[in-house]
Image (cartoon, rainbow, N blue to C red; front, side, top):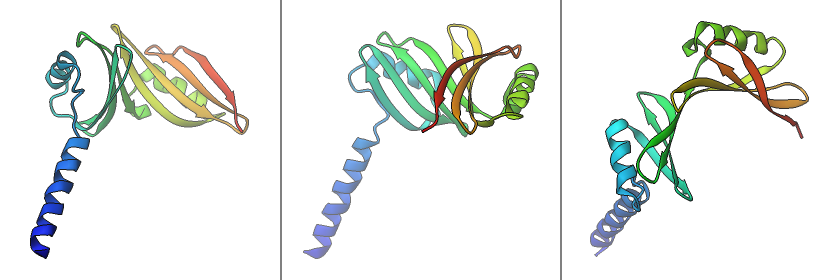
Amino acid sequence: MKKATGLLAAVIFSAVTWVSASPLPLDNQKVTEAFAKEFGGASEVEWSSSEDVYIVSFKLNKDVMRAWYTADGEVTTVQRVIQKEQMTYLSAKTVLQLSEEQTILSIAEISKEGELYYLVKTENDNYKSIYRLSASGEASRIEKKKKK
């Protein structure tokens, strides 16, 4: 009896794990198919949605990524966490200049509607900031928050 109970518990645990780890947005087949076609080898897939926007976070080839889809299954934005060495030369040079006065927290490469740019999160003793950098190295601060 104990073996049967243990086996049943293992089967239930496996089923719950499988269902909760489902990489599919079950309510939109177009989005599911588009994601599978574009990012077929993805792992650690997690979905969220807001109104008619589906957001998927995942890993692909060791890269941490996020993609935004319309309800029609069209990808609008792709974000990839990168290192400075993966940036264009001019944008990496700008990050090096930023790092002289601030700590670089993260760099994300954004591809949105045919445009490539970077979001660089930084902090110093007083503020956390986000900069938008073009591939040519032009930077503009898009957010500045006082640290608590």
